[in-house]
Length: 481
Image 1: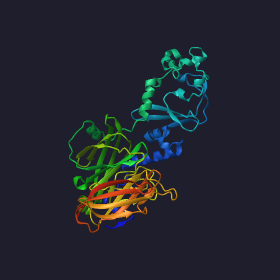
Image 2: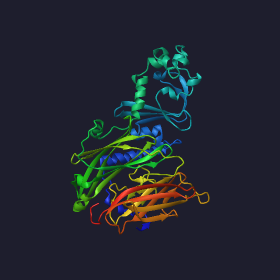
Image 3: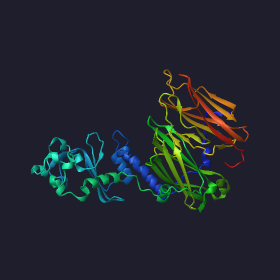
Image 4: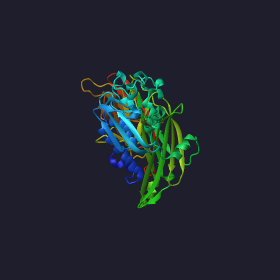
């Protein structure tokens, strides 16, 4: 077994379908989604990235408002009668108006208030949240000026004392100003978009067990921080199990994907959906049908919890549906011990010059890794290895980890070959939190059969070690893969 620190060239990924860039409603929706994220990051950042702020979240979900009333300096403010009337001083705020929002109705008004004067605008439930004088007794309402109410009766300070007794603020209140209406609006306006493939969601909710569209699914685990893990969920389906239709010079299959991640108490943690397009030229049908199509969704989950994944795929050309239900069990990484991610075997690993701005499939940092779910290789394929190592010590002089990595090839428990890296040639990236190992191993000369790869990492600075392994098989070079 020969080794090389080269990563797999681009040509290795040609056997994997790419999403077509044809102008479809789905593609246009995704492009608009990423445009909104970019706009939010540019205009709404305030210590946090723009997409994480309240204004950014609302902009991404609902788009640009029809009008914006902006008071970036706050200042004197004449309350409308439905807010109680009178004059006060307000924090900086913005009022967004939408003529119509699906599921919410017409004439939707949202206020974002910067109560800390730091540029961090937060979605307000009630209009008095922008009142800078509310809690110091100044800026009286009309009811307070006429001695019909005191500041102690204000609903913000004493909710139980509100109501009609408080005066004009309630006398002229609109139906949309009631507490329940405002709480409902705040909840609905931040809710996830309506699911497009509702029929697939209903299959999960009904706990349907039939499945006539076979596919494979794999979940991997990569430590993100002390409380969270990245979980790439990878799906592979044989093209021979899909129905292809002619579209111009190509044969095309379309697959609807719906996934739901729930806690063991059946609380929905995340759900996602997508439409995947795969195809090949008509004059390449025989080879195209022997290959597989692959899809990936990367999600973030809390560690030290167990989850259930329900995954539904539907062939949109034939109507065939496949269902898989399995557990997601993130590892409980020890804060001190040398630890590792899942071991990913691939014949398509490609370093990237820049980290993509979007949530691209198969991208982990600055490396694109397409897992080979069937773990079936031929002698002409490279055996690509991707592994993250955690809690490795950094040498104080060089600032680099001091690791020895053993890549062992076994068959039936017997070691056939060992590749040793003592110089860090397979370390693609390192920091105080992680070391990313990328290695390419040659399978030249191996007979068809079942094999195992064992990766052992030794931290020479403290003699700690971690070991992971995985099975794979080698097929004859002319067998379909």
